[in-house]
Image (tube, rainbow, N blue to C red; front, side, top):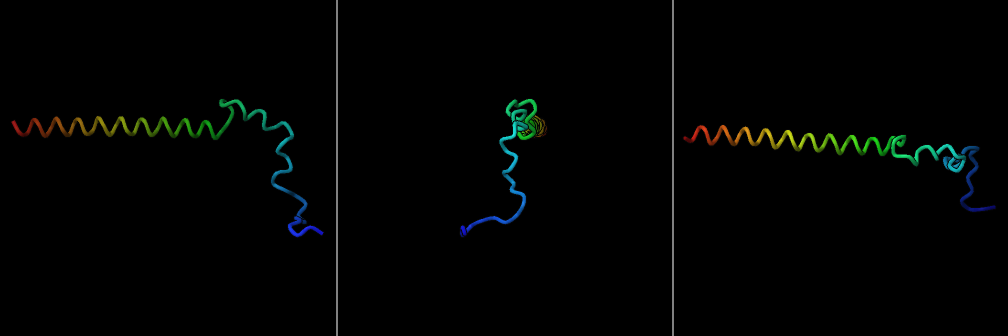
Length: 66
């Protein structure tokens, strides 16, 4: 008998090659790719808003010093 044999009736890798994952090769239908794209876009927007806020604060500081 094998030392590391698994006696459970279900293995998490049983259905990996059944063709259902072909759909996820296209980035449009891949939820992980969509999540990464949305996160990158959100991060970019946050950086852009941060920059605009810092520019406004800098303009106010320069206006107060005049």
